[in-house]
Amino acid sequence: MKAAPIFEAGSHRWWILYDQEERRVIDANVYVMESNGQSLILDPGGFEVFPQVFAALVEVIPPSSLKAAFVSHQDPDIASSLPLWHACNAQIQWHIPKLWEGFIRHYGALEAPLQNIPDEGGDVLIGGRRLEFIPAHYLHSSANFHVYDPEAKVLFSGDVGAALLPPGHDAWVGRRDRTGRAFDEHIAKAKYFHQRWMPSNAAKKDWINRVSQLEIEHLCPQHGAIYSGENVQRFLNWFDELTVGMGIRP
Amino acid sequence: MEIQHIMQVVDASFVARQSIEKSLREIDRRALNAMVLVKRHGNTLAGYGVVAQAFRERAANLKESASHLQETIAPLIQAHMRILQHQRFVASFSAIAQAMAQYGQICASLENIRTRWRDTIAREEVEARKILLRLIATVDVLQEGIEEQEYVVTNGRIEAALAEDTGAPLMRVSRDMGEAVRTVSNAIRTYRHQLESLAYESSTDI
Image (cartoon, rainbow over all chains, first blue to last red; front, side, top):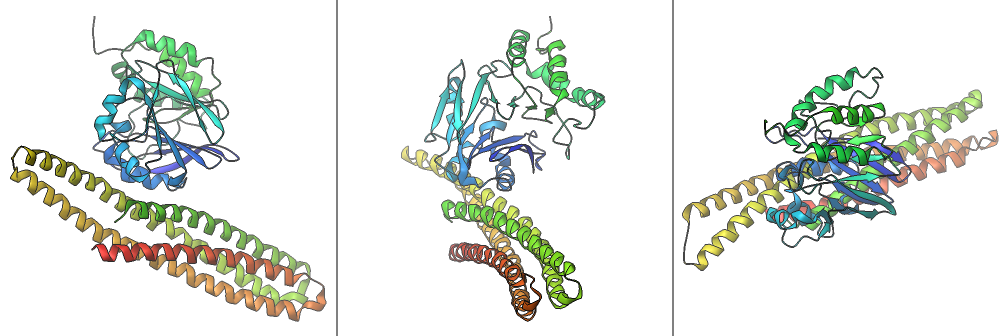
């Protein structure tokens, strides 16, 4: 797995850990935010990829700086590594959707300190910086949150924006491409994911309306590559037009 | 092996790598400053020029040696985290076996699978120890490079004393060089000490 910086302003930094080596499980990105020596890990990944996520993490932060972890929803590729992180550092506070508490403890984390995020969202303070938990219910999970950092203008968007990319993929969607061609090529690999995994057009519209109010420089999905600059608006427009929930055909 | 001890070493690896990289950048900067100073004074500081050049070349070698550090740290961390992962399996099978025993039931295949995972962990511990010894050897190479650099700094001090009448602030330059080398030397020594303690613990486990 590789580590790459997304944002840096003094002691405030964001990283992506991406392109995992284990291909038998779905490739997932892990994000890390550090502020004044304290860190938050976002969707820390599955049990099977824990060793490589941990090794990649140590390239960018000392693990003792981890104060909190964020779990966007209950899926195993997001939270099944929880008991291993807890074994390494029992002080980590786990911010999880309240609805999923009893489910997430099934991963073998009866003792872990879980902080429930209510349906309406909330926030967390890491190293003096406030991050917002933005509700993204039914995208795709019934209790689902994204994280917004207003200073860095980073939106961690969970499965929204996800794409299924081949091994060795880049961390960004054509950052230097101004024409939009790189976006068009990329989004073809995101289409099925959104059509099939996202169940609700109403939830999608509601999310787009709320997220459009935010200033976003980097939209960071849990699978695939980061949308930066103009690609953020391109993505929001594309998603707005897409019909989701294709598992049920009228 | 205690996971908390491994975590301490993991943290120490991060701190050591950061400190070494920062100090090496500083050493390179000091060496470059010294060379600029020598150039400004023309032939009068030719002797010190040789020292500054040697200092810079060794700084480049140290950077090269340090770059191999991360290549060995990552596999060591992965190896230990894999062991942690597999220990969870053993713990989980043990819990099931215990629960069954309360009802007077014994499951032979459960015991077999638990033994297989224990054997796997034992093999992984041997492998992790090999990686750790490789990392210590990499740190040793770095330490040797630092000792050579300390020798160059001493030569620099002698040359600076000889060229004192030129008015160039060579003593200060040499002192700065010495300080930069001492910082990285201390960081490496501390790190090696931590790795040795992990190696000792792993040798008693295996």
